[in-house]
Length: 514
Picture: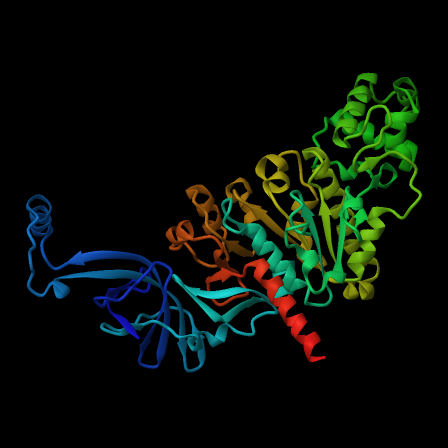
């Protein structure tokens, strides 16, 4: 159905389309313009009202209506007062396929609202369905948008939105899609305990592929089938702390010397087994007693250990009589499972250390396997590291302490089949270099101009005209920009609870048929 005609514009700027009286034209709408053998896909980025009458005359008419309540009938009102929309060209389709948008349609070419059939070229682009195609305010319920999982994972994903816009819902929908694909694994670092699910709250444990989920939590007794999140000091090295916890140069030297001297018992000896004088002697007087004393306090605080027992919610210096948690996670990843790490009841420093130590050891596994056993490396699953509040480990302030495993993966991960899915409310706090490494961006509503600009400037595709639309996005509405899709896609993300309900209904129907 035609809603307007092209009346001007340029290839480098925007097309001007006069909107037919009575038709709706909204920011974010995608229109199709057919001219000769070319089809132009254009997106409305602004809507304005205009008139052929002089501005002063229009103001005078408005004044008469306001002050004297006079009903003025204007001759040919529909012709004299109308709306224009500005539209950017997304794609140009010719007989031989898609072309760069180097041309523009002719004057009076008709702009029409497309049917789902016009977007058939977007189908079969990937395996992970995440939502419905959205054309402005209209949601095309019979058109599912899917993304290519492996490309997205290895080239990193940024999910950005204000509170309440649907970041966590998207993450659960995305992981649900990954659960249906073999040879893909994920580590979810969950600071709010919202991914696994609990009584009255749907989570990934309600997914039909729940056997592929491993849940590690300090509250394992409350969740039957879960694993206890317990990290023994013998499994930690000084490198697990660097770039995550702030230490002075003297403290780092003391940690390195202690590790060389005491090996895996370095933390136990520093904190429990030896006094400060013994440690100074063992380290050949290369560190001062004051440095050892301050290091003991900092380690005890970061590990959240009881000063009397040196035992904590997650960390402990007790002897390990079971398989290391890191070995359990490595085994689960090699089986292609999704691992959820519940850090909701530990403090900020302990949470960062848990996340860093797990991710660092797994990334090291991938790197070493590729270098020493290339054939075995090919059998390892693609691995996604999903984490919220990204500035805490990838922000400018966090990286001022030096690089950490997350920034290393951002730069090198794609060579080793490891990718990040970073979730944040404030992308402006991330360095430009990190933002540019996040090739796929899931953009939900962002009210802050600085955060919108940070995402726009670092996107793989030109979305400089979408700032207003991004600001106006409602809950669950998103724009996806990626080098692996044809143009920035507007869509409505599925509601995770609905996905689970649909799976349950489908399962019940299959049982009935059997």
